[in-house]
Image (cartoon, rainbow, N blue to C red; front, side, top):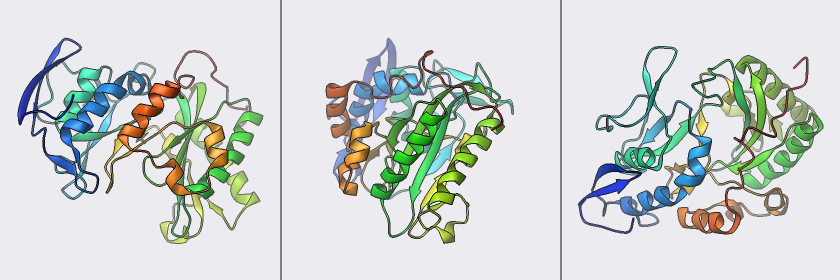
Length: 300
């Protein structure tokens, strides 16, 4: 979907979508236009959708880019096509389900550039999480390099418990570590995630923290285990991130994590991610399949 006129009607997956303001520069720092962002999603849909489909999506909307107003949209935005799949949450409200390239592009066309999803599917419900996630967020004075060292230790602990671990950049400053699990209540997943984060904090109290107190995070990596709560969401793998420059939540190899010596090595543009897809395919292909799901240890 290259640069195009101000208003264009396109067909995606047999659905007709009217896209506007395609020449608008959404990210002035990099020059990315709306058309270029939509092109990214058109190309990345095949790898993003398996990690979003079936889940109640919320969005960060930023029609004017990072310099304009941004807000979280938990309900289908005004202008959402009537063919977009929705699912009803426990509160009775509808949520968009990103289950097709057409839906992904339609939402981005409305300025909903970031996709966030929970660790459970609508069909299974919030008492049956199928993923665990740990969000590694560097405090002031440290960066993703220290997050990588923490991630390697987390991988060891998860694998010791029979869980596969998958690293993904947050698309901002840190890392997300995922593990596919058998259906488990959110409170149980949260308790396990908190316990494993606490073990690392006990090993390195000067470098790691699990407390939510933001003022104490300088010089440390905050391990956010709370995103396993049923009410929480995490940036979907491959989603764009609305920052000064357009980041992407990018799957990594563990070799890349081990080799990282500078934060710039793990900062990827949309174009970088498309090249990585061409080379590697989906590095998270094992995360949301039916095989390879680990069971959390008893007693956690």
